[in-house]
Image 1 (cartoon, one colour):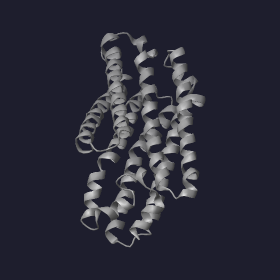
Image 2 (tube, helix red, strand yellow; image 1 turned 30 degrees about the vertical axis):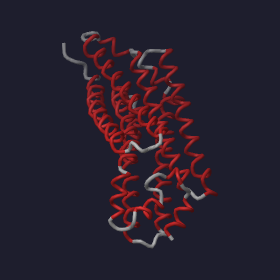
Image 3 (cartoon, helix red, strand yellow; image 1 turned 135 degrees about the vertical axis):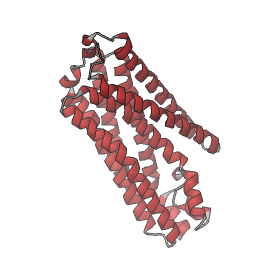
Image 4 (tube, one colour; image 1 turned 120 degrees about the vertical axis):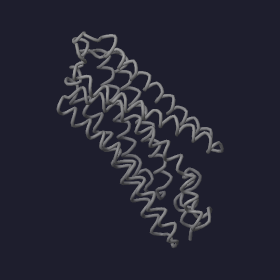
Length: 288
């Protein structure tokens, strides 16, 4: 008896997830090697993300082993959620929320004082909504362990969970691009303006991949294609974890990029090193 075709997308998602976990581990190692001077809270954040990602890949391995080895030749096994599958959804929700709150935190310190809450409040509300809908979906999946429950809760559970991710991700990216462009318009140094443009490209690239996977999840939910929905869900949490780690690990490169044109002080002045240590207006004054 061959392996059921429904397991194909789940296997593909699991393999891609394992590869992305390797990148997460590498980025975590690079972070602790090169940013030992960072605040303990930031180090704790990186450690939590790595631990959650490690837990998630362990759950993924258990899921694949159960469906492809333990339950091999038992077609009815595909009709039920195993506990590790539902738990992996919960871990993903936590990783997405942590990452989006991290970028909302950056936006808060990049914004002008009078628009800080105006920009970040909608993002935080969407993140909270994502967490709420995600928790409802997870609890219902634990209560009813049939795969068909994903169809039953798609309108008030799965779809809102994914939709809030898409909206929050779009808001974060658009806000970052607008704020970076606005701050760059006050700068007189062409080199620093090029650095701002580089950061805008990074922000867009960071969003595109996660946004495409989230939209694909929405499509799979609408089409009731549970196998591809599960496979994509294996991947999306790791994309968020890597986007957070990449944003931390590129700071040194961006400083070196700017130091060849202006002084490191001027680069730091527009928050590319650590936005939590100063305000947007202070950065503009220092540049001027």
